[in-house]
Image (tube, rainbow, N blue to C red):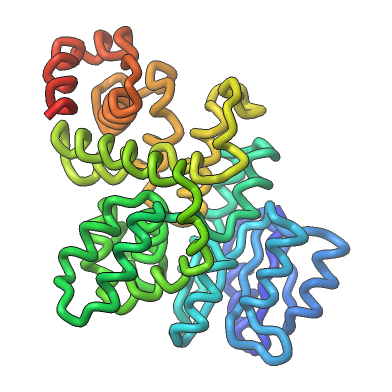
Length: 356
């Protein structure tokens, strides 16, 4: 596995190198003191993971990672930053998969790199890796986006109103979960549901996320995104009634890959090169995993289309998400799976919940 570390402070790179010497891994690590030097090295040999400081002279981390994204979209991008000016935060959101605050413990940083590399063993399909690597942002539902902007400009707006709107939209929710679970904000504890994530971040950071979505203002002409949001919200509400808030968040995000325009065209459901995960589910799961969401949510997104393939035969988050998303999309849940997990007799009650 190829890993590159980029920082204009040589002592930071030396500290990372010392930490690497104490670990037993088979990574091929390279170090660069500028974005330009790093790009030259990447032209010789692309990297699986790139870790870059944000504040560097001539070419800062956001500019550097933007070039990495465009030229090597399959590379996992991690950014380190010791400051959080709004403009810089918005720029970083557009180019990085993970965020780490400086100063950062080298052991913690290397654990994040190991986690990122482990994703490659789970998601090997080049179609998935390349397509997800190109994604900067997902489009929020136009109606939700317009209403949030209206509320944010009203000084008398109740914070709860904004939170409820954000929690109803898959694109906003995924970004909020990404930031809340980053090493910038998580303080080591993973956050599994969108409502806790919003409270954890606070209103100022939430405003930044909305600001970062301004480039999708023209999404108001795309009615498909509004329809996808409404269906995802139905699935989320049903999952919450069946189980709770964690399952509601997973159901809201289950079909997030459909927000990618290339995947919204009618087609037979393709599978990944591994042959066991439908392509859309794999892309959604890989995106959420790259953004650092908890693995129970990632696994539910990956497996919700075909739950009977899972080795887990109890009715947990995977089963709840499968039922909620299938019913919200007017489909028929896998009755064999429900029978195996002893939940088939609950199907009429779930259908009644959805009707309510």
